[in-house]
Image (cartoon, rainbow, N blue to C red; front, side):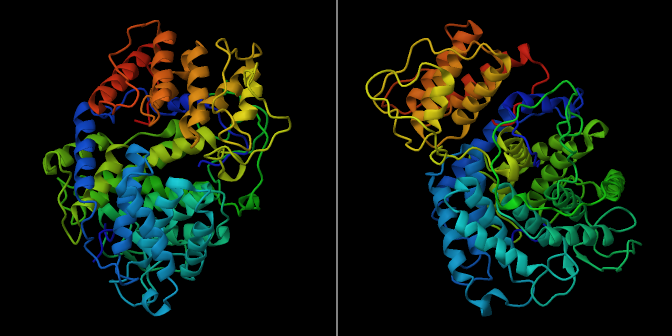
Length: 575
């Protein structure tokens, strides 16, 4: 049995970070959870998990690596994905090992005999799904050819009824289906077309195999109609797995969006006062027509699942109802709540204290400073991966990334900003730009090193026109958060820091963790200027010296706390 076993939003217009900030209005002001991702208890647990992952970076996975179907490569992919989500460092040895596993496993898939090895010991689908997650998270452009090959496998592996299962087992497997759907969602957001009619079939299957009580089983009997039948093997873990798979599949088909008529955002619950700025759209292969689906039965299915989970005997709390796969279950719960929060909008009522449930459970199981123990055919790295993804709200981060930077077809600004060509000659020696728009054109130009050695005006000014200024800020914030060009991040951090705009503070806080010393310096100094706290919060930066990580995290917490005094409703998702 493998570690994974029982265990967005797409819009035609790109969303600025201002709109992503306003998304927090969807969440009710009164929160049932006492803990947050920024709580020192949570931060310390995540750092302990990271330390354990690094200590075990060379350890062998539980399952073998020389067999396609065994699942060992999937363990490494999962670990790489989790670490990348936490620290966003593609050079981290755990991340590198995960990427290597994803690439080498693709070559092994040519062995059809191993790939189709029958029975519950075959973990190929889980490995494919986690390989998609880590490759797309590290560099969706660089690994586009590999991601397209993985999509081909997922297209071929779906059963005729719409679900996914182990080779030779015609029954659909809810656990495997949720990971396949998560991989398809990730591919779609990476601008890669998936089998959308197949996704439509998966939605139908998930609706048909839901138990009358509202839960989902591990292995499902398909009644062949929308009249539910009693299913065997219901568990809280599979309830949140089935519910999250249903919501994610529906999001692939854009069931939750509205037509982009004037004054509409396509995001349920977003204030009507929010207006979108339309940037140039980038067409890609996912812009093809997608089949529709009536959201009513999907919402009803989630309401029924909530009723199932509200019964004490069905609690998703692994400390209350014992689970053989508690860490897997908690990450699934986070995914379920994250998507339910988005699709329900103003109707969302979070499960009472669901985040506290996970935090308290993980506190009790943590190996101090070393992550979480392996159990039920898992290693410590697998347990820690699931635990950290829960603690950092990994799914909500993925949703936020799409809301902040998605263009049509799910493509955000290219990570290295080298593929957007502009007209104009080279500038040699003199200041590289006199206006922010000119500067942005250069940053998004075809030479990521074009700014090397060139000077920048000290008094760079954003446009006075509100609409243009907002667009400039959005472009700069995406650069400072996501460009792989350190020159682009440097310029973006510097101009944002000089903007005197309170709304850019979250992006500058994010940039405090940048691997480049000058980016961190510009971000720190910009925060001090905007806040008029010229002494800042004691974050010393010395060129050529390693940053004190504890001091960095303390500074970020202090700046977040300060910003919340300015905007109490803001929720920091990228910790």
